[in-house]
Every structure is written in structure tokens, then in C-alpha cells.
Image (tube, rainbow, N blue to C red):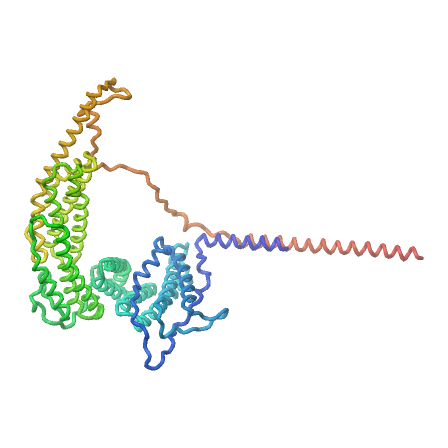
Length: 619
């Protein structure tokens, strides 16, 4: 009987796993997440506040790193939910924030703490609930038919995530700094938007998503280069959900006027004579105004010359300006965080763009001066393969300067308030920088003995010299860059033609030297044989030249397979199988009991006959 019951259990488990594979989510029958304490904060003492300085917690970047490292890079929300559960368990143990042993015992969230990891407790709880909701939603979408129970369960999980996010925002307002509070606000607005979109409350969801995008874009302006790029990408990820809300509300796709509120009354602009791309500026802070004018004085003191300068002297001269602009940018970002996304945002955005444009322009000017000095060192050289030539001018250094210039120019193209004239001129600057990099790359190949590759690059560069064209310059600070770009642009055709001719001459000299060495060596082999040597300039040398750029060719790749028959699979009927197994087990049990009863009866009959024989023998 034990063997039969184990077989029956095995059959039922196999059948249930088969049903789960045919469209029923195994997660739908899983219990709710454990270890979820109530959202209660302990009552602080009268007049007692936090005993620590406000915590600085990079909330959004922490969420992004944890998601990308634990399954969401492959859309594996089950793995991420399991990670959040383990993370919560570790936090409870490390922080000694437990909820009873065995039976659950409510433990209120502490009113005061000195460990910033307490902020990760509601964050991990919100992420776990959100990932569970997305997992149930994905399982429901992959099922053969929509299950209303799973959808209701996923909506409840999203609602739980919103509760934890609001609790996190409430805790951050007490224990964290202003920037962390803004990140918590953006995080809560995003989860509320997702929750309301699942409930098909499109109007409220649209408002929450717009708010989240506005805060993320504002934080990207008040951040450094790395964080700014991350926050801009975060704001762009909201576009699909925003388009869905607009579609269901009947709004046009390019309607972005909802999140643009009229700016508050501000100080009169253009009173200081500072303008950013035709618009006057107002500086609300006197301290920032003094620092900014000090930086502008340093900029006016720097004069650009066309003579060769020492690299260290150039870096030291522009390094002081870079440090001063870095301090100003840090102060502007701090003031922007204090004002918030609902204050005088337009004034601070324009001021930040003005300072950032000057900082990028001075970095561009420094790199242009270094590139121009490198080109001047290149003029007296005739052969880059010698040690003396590489000691005086390294082509890879010129490539590094070109890469830095291209990065700074891309930063200028992303500045607010762009115009067609500025965009076209910056595009021309980028083309000049790319041509310079191509020249230095060809010289690198030549210096390492790859004459053929260098000649091919110089030939291509010589053919596209007429593609770039410079127009008139712009106002300062971009106007300071135009003379240097003109110098580089005017000298490029002559420089490229000179090095192209030298490369071709070097190729001819190499071919002639090779032919002479063959003649001196007296190698005479039959033409077309295994060891034959073709004369230079013949058909073999012509075939050795590679086409540049190379042509496209087909390569094998893994095919894409789409399972169109999966939704049409019919679930098997297992009731008859289970009844049949149960009937066999009952019959076997009955037969076993009959055999046992028969055996007991036979034994009793034998004993009775023997006892009767004994009694009869005594008679």
C-alpha cells in the first residue's frame, strides 16, 4: 500500500507539472511573501529628532544596479524576487530588525537609526512586491487564456509596492537629504503610475508618469556626467508607458504641455549682461554670481596663440579654469536640489546650461590647443617609422586628443535651446575632428610597418577632404573655438596629400628593394610552380591590395523560431487516469485483505482439526 500511494503521488506531481507547462502559472498557487511587517513607525520622544546628519542614498542607481545584476537584464523577475527576499532576510539579521521567532510579532520601524541600510528595507520590500506583480502579469500573458484571479493578484502586488514606496518616501523626508527625497518621489510616482495603469485609471497614471519624468530630467541637470546619462536614460524608458496613457486618453503623441507649468515670478533677466544663446540670464544667488564672474575673468585672461606650447603649461593654464568651473557647477547643482523641481526651474536650468557651456568650451579649447601643437610637431617629420620621429610626435596621442574633442562636442550638441546654425557648425567641427583622427590612425599603421593599411586610409581621407565645410563663427564662448578649427581645417588637405605621397613612395621603395634582393639572391624558380616568385608590379601584387572599405558579405546566424501552435495545445484530461489508478489500488487492497482472511481461516481450520483429533484419540 505504501508503494501504491507513492506511485499515485508521483503521477499527480507529474500531471500538475505538465499542467503548469501548458499555460498555468506555478506562481499563482504560491503563498504570499513572508516577513512583511506592518507599515508603522515607532513614536519618537517629544522634541526628539534624528540624531544623525541627513543620509545621502543613491536610490535610483541602487535599484538599477540590483536589477541588472540579479535577473532583470534577461527579464527574469522570479530570480529578482528571490534576490529581494534574500536581501531582506540579510538586512533583518544585520540590523537586528526581526519580527519574532516562529510566530510573527509586529515590530514597528525605528523612529531614529544611525545605519543607512534601514532605508533599504522598504526599498527591497517594494522591489519584491513589484517584481512579483510583473511576474504574475507575464505568466498571465503567456497563458492560453487570461486568468482573472492572476490579474487581480498582480494588481494587489503592485498596490503593495506603492504602499512600500510611499513608506520609503515618508522615511526619507525625515532621515535623508533633499536629493534622496527627490529620488524617492520619482520612484514612488513611477510605481503609482504602473499601478494606476494596471487598474486602467489612465488620467491619474498619466499625471504620475509625467511627474516622474519631470523629476528625473531635473535631477539629470543637477548631476554629474555619469549620473546625468543614467537619469536621462531612465526618463526615456518612461516613453512607452506614457504613449499608452495618451492613446487611451485620446491625446496626441507629441502633446507635452501637461508637465509645463508657468514659471514663478523671478528677477529681471539680462540685467547682468549675460546671455545664453540669445536669452538673458538671472542669477538668484549672490554667492554663485561672484564665483561665476570670477571664472569669466579667468577665461578672458587666457589668450590663444598659434605657436608651439609646452603640453604641461597648457594643461596648467586651463586646469585652473576647469577647477573653478567645477566648483561653480557643484554649487549650482546644490542650489537646484534645494529649490526642487517645482521652484524657479527655468532660471536655474538656463544658469546651469550657461555655466556648463562655458566649461565644455574651455575643455574644447584646451584639447584644440594640444591637438594643434601635435600637428605642428608633425610638420618637420618625413618618416614615422623611425625612433626619433616617434619620440617627438606619437600618433596615438593625437588620436586621444581627437577622442576627447569628439566627446566634448557631443556634450555641446545635447545642450538645451539648440538652433539650426549651432547644430550645423558643431557637425562640421565633428567632421574635422574625425578627419584628424583618421590621419593619426594612418600614421600609426605606417609607424608599425603596416604601410598598405596606412595608404588605404590616407587614400580614403584624401577623397573626402572636400566634404566638410566651415561657415561663420558663433558668439562667445563657442566663438573662441572657430579660429582654431579654421587653422586645422585649412591645413588638412596639404597635410593629407603630403603623407599620402610619402606612403605611396614608401610602398614603391619597399617593392623595389624586394625585387632587388630577389635579383641579388639569384632565385630562379619556374613560373607557376610551388615555389615561384612573381615579379613586383605584376598580377600577384595587384591582387594583394585589399579593397577599402570591405564589401558586405552574408554570414550564418541562428534562425528565429516562433512557436505558433503553443496557444492551441489542449490540456489533457487526467480525471479518467486518476480514477483508473484509484480503482486499481482499491482492488489490490481488497485482494490483499481477502488473501489475508483466507490464510487466517485456513490456519484456524487446521488447528481445529488437530485439536478434534487429539480429543478423539483420548476417547
